[in-house]
Length: 364
Image (tube, rainbow, N blue to C red):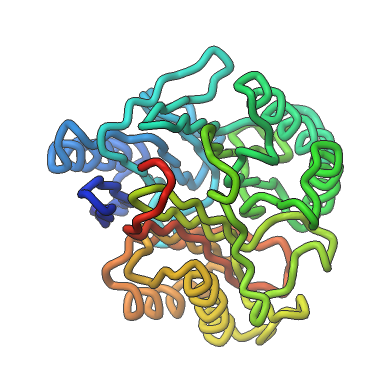
């Protein structure tokens, strides 16, 4: 089954987000994977040759046995053990952009030249056999060096990261410390900026990997083109409880605004978990917080292209699935088994949005 949404910029430039899931749960992994691939090929045919994938993420139920069976990709790709909670074995999220031509670089990242900008995407970075602190610090340092080689930096160019943490209840503190150390070294502070991010439970196929990272950076941005979105009346600055990420990051181009909303949970503007133990109320408060971030960026739910939902307890799937289906019938979403970084949070979501605008910056 394909859920997809196409967003259209000023002047007609298109982007599509699609989430492909499996209908027949009785098939084994190979059969389900073939079904996903058939739907993906159908999506490409429907979208036309001008629409090209720039990023894919595979969600697996058992990465140790499944990752090696995934097909090769012609764009940046990520794979993570976060089981789809519809009781299937595999699902796929794809981001497609009109006239994109991602090319693999020697360092394993993908670069897409589009207009005046270079978009750099990394998927599945990891450091086997190294603890969460050293892994996180080293991966961010490598991204910094990669961007410096292009005349940029994390501070100037990195828009979004995803950090998937094996045994998040144990290892997340090391991830936070490693990120804090790297950010302090490279000039990302509360006075400058942080990066939109999701830090969530997720396993690599190699059990010795404590944390893996995906990232997205843009080279060619002018001063003021990228800005932080915080909604302080609803959410507190993350540095107040010792972590370093932005609630959301927006980028204005001449023809569109991109908004990357970080992993967002049921939290108030003093950093407290709201509605502990109540999945329905936590979901509603989470929506309120995300809506506040969208509003601060002058966006609405209709501008959202995709939603990823993370649950700590699979027993909550029935309630959450019903709530999302009713609230967001036109937005592609998937609900995944992935513990949130604080045990009191039962649910977290992230999303990406695009709104047509007109500005003085170069078009996307």
